[in-house]
Amino acid sequence: MMSEGWDKENILKRRISRRNAVSTAAKVAGSAVAGLVIGGVAGYVLKPEAPPVEKTVTMTVKPKGKFTDPPAPGAEVVVIHGFDAAYPPFTEVTPTGEAVGFDVDVVKWIANKYGWKVVPKPWDWATIVTALVEGDIDIIASGMTHTAARAEKVWYSIPYYVYYHHLLVLKDETRTMEEILNSGEYIS
Image 1 (tube, rainbow, N blue to C red):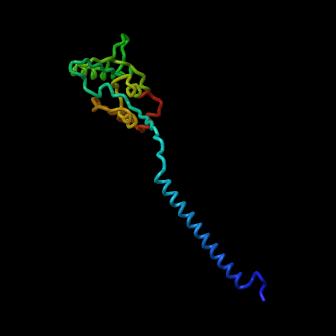
Image 2: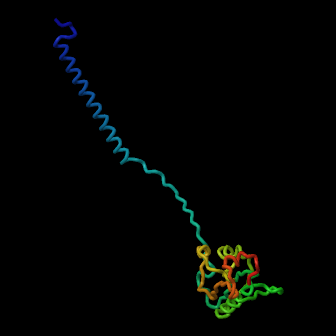
């Protein structure tokens, strides 16, 4: 005979209780999941708007160049000509302070043709490109060789003078160019 707690009736009640408990737990879990889903959707749909955010944009704007726009008719055009003061015969300054040389003459010729006033301004060669970029001078006409590094910063005109460097030697010279250049002798 079974003990009092293990008779058929008690076992059936317990099974039913377990079924009810599992069923109730499933209902609670289902309700919780449904509540989370409904709450999530409602929270997304009904979410408050974020306050507007002010955005600051910083831009570096280069000032317009002096010659970006054509001058007004009849206006005086002043061109500041930057040059190396010690590059004869192309550019130099005389003891009286006058700028002279081939490049100076070319700039004067162009200025006369267009009615411009030229202000010659000797400049240290090491910083002359920076002076042009920063607007301290308007043009460089001083025997400047076209290089890729300079072309990244400045615009070159069509060349008005082109020259090539050559090494001339006597007909009976037997040394190589490298030997001559590294000889320590004066070369002219």
